[in-house]
Amino acid sequence: MTTSPPVSDGLPVDQLLNPAVVGPRIAQATGDKAWEDFSAELIAGGKSNLTFTLRSDAGELILRRPPTGELLPSAHDMGREARIQLGLATTDVPVAEIVLYETSGEDLGVPYYVMEKVVGHVIRDELPAGYARSDDDKAAMADAQIDAMVALHAVDQESVGLGDLGRPEGYLERQLRRWLGQSEKASDTVRADRLPDLAARLGESQPTSPSSRIIHGDYRMDNCVVDPDDPGRIKAILDWELSTLGDPVADLAQTVLYWGDPDGPVVPLIPSLTTEAGWPGPQRLLERYCAATGTDPAQMPWYLAFATFKFAAIAQGVATRSEAGDMAGQDFGDIGPQIRELVEYGHSILDTRKGTH
Image (cartoon, rainbow, N blue to C red; front, top):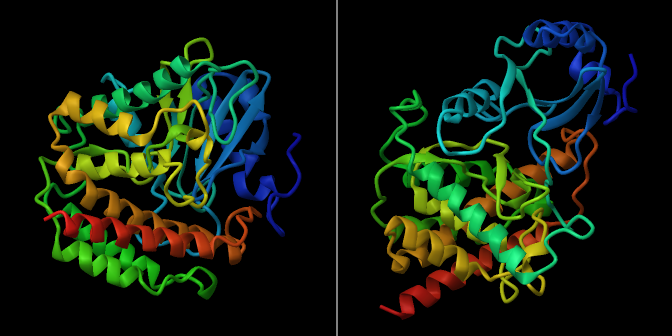
């Protein structure tokens, strides 16, 4: 068996994946003994759960497991991620096929799952050579991302066995409490003094949510596999860790924040490719979604401010775990100033919104 070098101090791939146990599990699930002997490589870009490419004579698969170290309550639920993708497999939402999921923790000490490797482009900070070079191609990529989100939000959770994925009421209140609580655990390097004030302002002006739907919670370009032959087609949506039943407009706002605005702040940890020349602005995403769903665009400022709050707290958690050595050796640099700027941006959105009433 050949594996990649250690991925964090004292934690080589063998220890993170236990191939002697996991290999036979995959072989049994696939009916292919070639999986009893595989190599593994950590995929760069993961900011929470650890994602590996597994290779054997049978081909390639993807394995996801939680990070090392102390895990936050209800976070990094691998069985939940797998179950969501299994439920969506019969819908118009593009998802990868689940090959194996193990929830007891017997194999690795934590739950994990294995899925097919979908052939295509996962685009982060640059486009593949010669791919989607025209402005029309870039617009098609933006439209495809929104259309897949519209398809997700159209799914009846009860009909796909996911009606118990989360509580249908009170999503925004819970999110404000949850991420404010998580932010209190942030290291001093990424602490944002005005984040609690932003949470309070959001709570005071919170809108009434539309009907609860399955939401992704972390939907952005590098969580999608794009067809290598058609920039306007998404072959699979990845990384369902934060998926739940919740407010679909909040899901949209998070995506719009990730997309970025050349006139807005830098969003830490998120590639800024789509803020470069030739890409449509975030308004195109908003307008396409609202036209398809009947969502009132006047609601968006609150939701965009909420998105800045939520992601600032998420980024704090990622940076804090990285500083503690719990991100398989990944170092995201000094993102404290960017987090604080993002919080200020959230305040400015609410200031502008208040001034228009």
